[in-house]
Amino acid sequence: MPLHPSLEEGLGALFMVFLCALCVFGVQKERKGEEMELQEAIMGRRSIRKYTDQKVSDAQIEAMLKAGYWAPRVNERWRFIVVRDAETRKILSRRDSPKGKVATQPHVANAPVDIVVCIDFRGASERDRALYAMQEASGAIENMLLTAHEQGLGACWNCSFDDEKVKEVLGLPEEVTPIAIISLGYPAEAGKGIRRKTLEQIIHWERFKD
Image 1 (tube, rainbow, N blue to C red):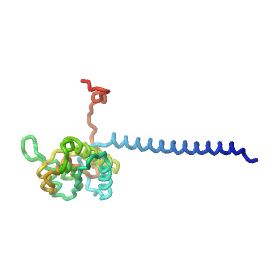
Image 2: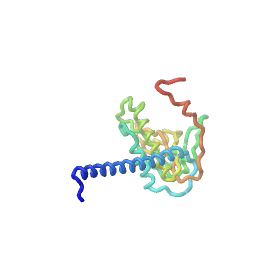
Image 3: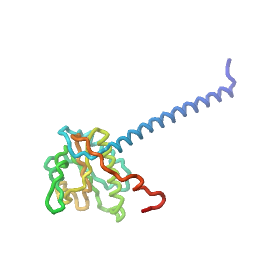
Image 4: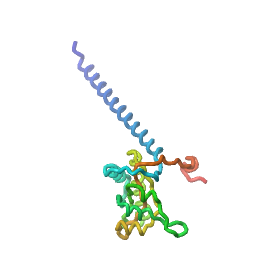
């Protein structure tokens, strides 16, 4: 027995609503899973300073660089230099000690790969120099560290190095400044948890309160 046209139309509309609900539920479920994986990466990442001799592939490095590229940006003054050469890595590992003596960070020299993050200040405004460029570069570094962790790699964000030696060995122009070195490799240690302040100590609602 054929359905009344109005009833048939109503059932068709109800079916479309049902399909849309299924799609929304599926997307929300998928997004929830992605958020859980992201939180796991954020909470589980540690600074790793000991690495195995296992080679880090170009594809793994490119995945990190792509993640850095998609960080929030203003003028994209970030520049990334991938270093595999052992002699160059030795120079990158040098830093000034508090007593003025030359010291080294062995993990920077021993890592199979170092990624030097630089900022190109050429043509930058005062606000760009003081704030924007550092903000976007920092966001890119965090994205790269999380992607390294996701791929089973260990990495460390290093900021203690000899600026002039780094500029010299990498051939950086005058206004291109190194701000960080990411040492990278397969982890030979688990990494240590660090003490952090409680959220209550650092979060303020509406206004700053001592």
